[in-house]
Amino acid sequence: MNNGCADESLALLSDAVREPWATSVLHQRLGANLWRVGRQTEARDTLRAAMRKFPEDLKLLYELAEFAEGEEGLDLFLLLLRRAYGFDFGSVANEQHRAARLDHSARDVVYLALMRSLTCSKLQLAQQLLDVFRRDLGVTSAYLACKYVYDKVSGSSGHEWLETGSTSPMIFDLDGVDLARLLPADMVGNFDQQLREDLAAKVPWRRIYPGSEAETWRTDMRGLMNVQSRPIMAFQRLAADCVAKYLKLRRREVADLLMGKKALVLKKCWANRGTHFADLTSHIHEGVVSCVYYPELPPDLGDHDQDAGSIEFGRPNVPLPVEFKITVIRPRERRMLVFPAYAFHRIIECKFDRPRTSIAMEFHGQAPAAAAS
Ligand SMILES: [Fe+2]
Image (tube, rainbow, N blue to C red; front, top):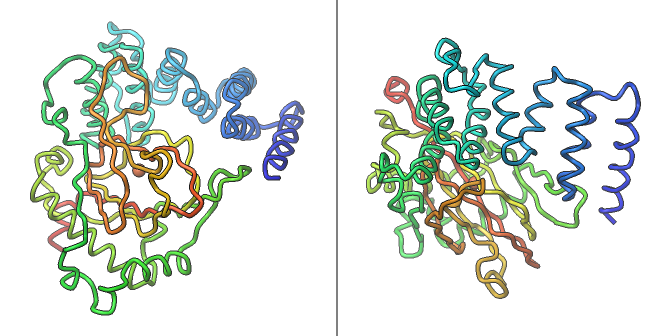
């Protein structure tokens, strides 16, 4: 039923982009929709054709670079860096990039160019990109994720601690924890139920995978911030307590990201709820430390494929010629996972009869002056 709607929408978009008035945005929408329904080759061809029609459109160039594979993707991101920021990374002899500076808006482009240069085993180029990333944008979670992969692919031992399992999360099982210290008395016995009720009633959700049968929903990345809900606010205090313990025990893992900042502040808090999670590529978060918690899990979790619906840590988001240490953790009720923001992670594909709900958070470093005020 829904697939019929998706087909109809694709047919309308395909007709529209043939018109002389068709905009670049229309081509991008068709490309994105084709990609979403698994027609990757057609999505790339659509954007390549659009590039010929709108050669100056940098947003379109970004979209095509994201969809392209291997060296084509790398070349397109390098072209984007040259056109948008005046950086010429194509030639090692070219010194142009030393005079130019990157600004914060370049971060995603440099990150994606870096990961693709590592996929193509272009280590000299990757080193060049890493140097400029650090010089102009500082040590961020994206920089550390790339550095982690670079050290592994190049065989360098510069960041040994990144190789010793620090990207795997710290597990806090709340059973047996003195919740009375952290939760209002009326919540201690039925905290998760109250959390589920307010997630259903007080939080704005939007459907993901539109056009598919999957009943899966997501909130805005800050969708659980500033919500008038005692259980959600209590949950955030609970998470902050786990993060404080994580920092005490594993400060070394996030020392580069902390950069002398003593306090962390919750910047993003969002939720996913659904019966079907597919095509979820590995990714990293921003900030210093992240958490994830499971207020609702399907009873048949692990019955069929024991890893379905689990969270996997350590696998980078591009294919690479080396093996990484992979950690798979099955969600459990009353389980909080805390991990460094640079840790690659993904949900393993799953399809259940009942929903799997997770809440995720990002804690960012707070500058000392702001922390003192
Ligand atoms: Fe995530």
